Length: 337
Image 1: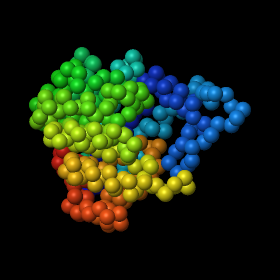
Image 2: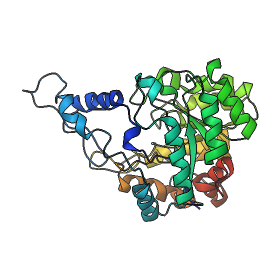
Image 3: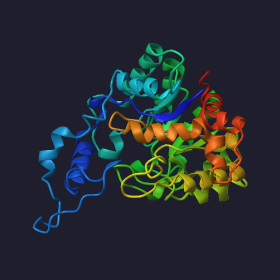
Image 4: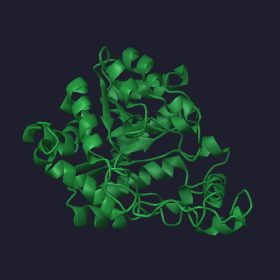
C-alpha cells in the first residue's frame, strides 16, 4: 500500500490575485523560469539587468494555471501511473495572508474537497484549511470535519502566524474533540515567504499543551537542507509528533549536474527512523500538476524497495518499517482505510 500523505488539487479561483502577483515577481527574478528538476540552473546573460529579468506583469497571466487541478484528474493520473493507492490532500486558506478574499473562499475549498472525497471513494482524503486569524476559524474547521469528511486540519504557518500563538488553540481544541491530526507546514516560507513561524520549534508548545492530538510536521522541516534535526530534539520529550517527507525528493535523483543524494537521504532517513521511530515517518511528495513524474517516481521507488536500497549503503530497513512509512502510517494517522 502506497499513500502519498501530502498532495494538492487546487481550484484556480482559490488563489488571491495578490498571491499570483507574488508568484509572478518570483518568476520575474528567475531566468526562463529558473531551475527545474532535470535541468540545470540558468545564468543571466551579462547584458541583462540586475533583475527582475522579466516583467512580472507579463508573467502574471500564466501564474497558478498549471498548478490547478479542480477535478483531481491530473492528481489521479499521477497516482495511477506511479502506483499510488491513496492520497491525503491539503487544503490551504490563502485569504488572510494576502489581505483579500479569493473568488473561491476557504469554506468552498473545504466543501469542494468533500466532493472529491466522494468522487474518489477510498482513495482521496483531505485535511481542511483554516487560518486561525479568522474569527470563525474553529467553526470552519469543525464544519469541514463534520459535514465534508475532513480527516485533519492543515495550518500553513508560513502565512505569517505562529503555531504556538494562543490564537491557534481553538483549532487545536477542535482537533482534540474530533480526534483528528493537525498538519503544520514547517521548514521554509511558502510563496508568502515567512520562514520564521514555520520553524519546527514553534510546534513544541502546542504539542505539549494538547498531548492527545497528533501533530504532523509537513515537509519535515524543509528537506535534506532544512532544520530536521530540531525535530529530533523535540521528539525526545514530545511523543505526539510525526513528519511527512513532502518535497524531500528533489535533490535525490541523479542528474547531469551531480550523482544525486540518495545515500545522504537514506542516511538521514535512518537517523529519523532510529530517533523518531518508523511509525512517525510518512512518504509524501506535495504533488501538484507541475511536478516531475520522473523525480516523484524515483522517490516512490526508494520506498517500494527500501530494504534493498538501504542495504546498498549499509542500512537495514525491514519490510515492516518500509510498509509503515510508505503507507501504513498515513492510513493510521488520517484514518485512510
